[in-house]
Image (cartoon, rainbow, N blue to C red; front, top):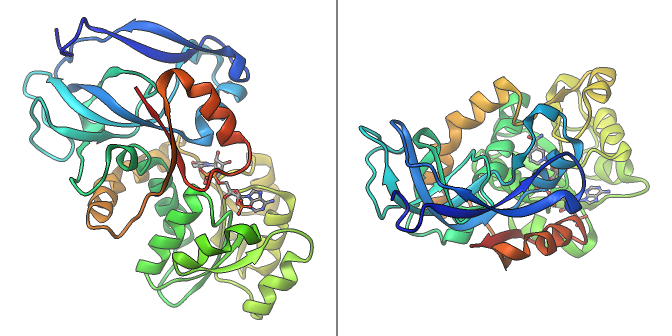
Length: 319
Ligand SMILES: NC(=O)c1ccc[n+]([C@@H]2O[C@H](COP(=O)([O-])OP(=O)(O)OC[C@H]3O[C@@H](n4cnc5c(N)ncnc54)[C@H](OP(=O)(O)O)[C@@H]3O)[C@@H](O)[C@H]2O)c1
């Protein structure tokens, strides 16, 4: 058996597109790893808005039934022949994190070794399981807009998971950030070096108070009409604005960029920066705040919490 168990795992799947009511916890076989694959006993599964959103939208109907969850941490239980982890080496018992994963809301899974990295000892399993989706997204937002030292960025949803990663990566690069948030969460923006402004009516005036000449880059993580319109109004060049939430039609109409993990260029870029981001987190230079953990079987309670009032950090499932 590859998995130190009976080769079975519980896994959350969605048989067809829909809301949380289409999610099901089922028993599945854990394949023994082939060449280039690794089996991992999941210790923590990270939760992201995309988990439920992609099932709800069901943009690729042929992709169902579809296992849920994009990132995990855990312990290697088996490696395929002549197989190394993405970070090199690898042995049974190694503590690892993995992204991008298909079906991470599970007890165990077999996945490509190229997506598995040694877990820095300084990160808990919970932190490691929620690092890379948000961090790689933030890194790509800075990359596609060409944000540079000494420039000013407007970040929408700065207190969210992607926003907090943007704040930290921008601070390392000497980029000034004006970040929109609820007043109750201004402390999060300040903690990572940003200047908070409340979203809501008259947002543009509040941004202009801080940046009278406008901003060099606009990074949207919320997709509201307000965030998109204010970004377009204050950024010097719409080509240096990106949204991770706006639709293709909205981005085309506004002449700004839109990126998503399923787009080939985004995937290639994000995959290329994973190892560096893991190292940065291991050095304590990229913090991940875990707000709450839930047993794997309570994933739907956790998913409802994620869609409700912001939990103030990442939510994690524990098999
Ligand atoms: N395209 C991609 O590749 C990609 C990748 C990752 C995430 N995403 C998407 O990006 C979005 C953010 O993801 P996340 O993981 O950072 O989510 P998150 O942790 O849930 O954060 C969402 C944030 O939105 C803020 N917010 C709520 N209403 C707002 C408003 N009217 N104006 C401005 N901010 C508002 C909240 O801040 P306050 O509580 O302070 O208001 C909250 O911190 C989600 O829609 C997610 O699906 C896309």
